[in-house]
Image (cartoon, rainbow, N blue to C red):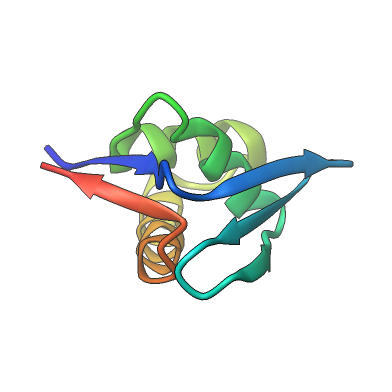
Length: 88
């Protein structure tokens, strides 16, 4: 099962519940919304899609299917922006 981790080349910080992450490849500052911030924090030690969906279920009281779809979309977006990396 794939695991998502923070890109070790990025720098980031959470301020008032919102993550701000700088990607060195393009020197961009990315501001993450609340759900993306939670997932970014979760991936510090590595997390699976199931871990991410479970977190969204707990935090937002949504159905597991909805949380899984939303978590997958968010994680894919963070990977595309080089904020996270995927490990097999």
